[in-house]
Length: 80
Image (tube, rainbow, N blue to C red; front, side, top):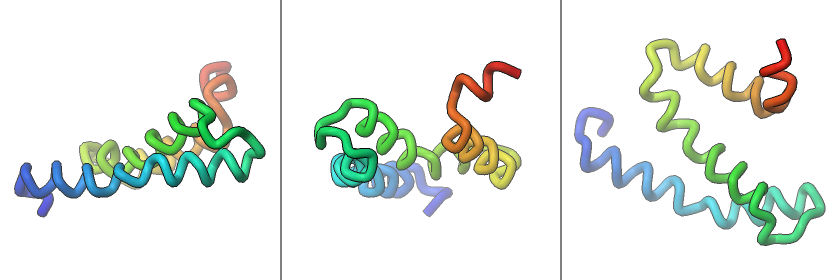
């Protein structure tokens, strides 16, 4: 599938179609309104991780970096 662009695009589209449901779940977990835009952005970003990692020469390092950003936040990562 990864070597067929049309299938890869379709797979990504099917995966990211869950962004609204994930955003609602994140909002509920964070005790925010269901339509909170920051929760929607986080959900979309999270669902795009597989596509981002797929393009990296070292997928494990890429995943570690992405999840460190999620854990620590942008301000902490840029302060050093």
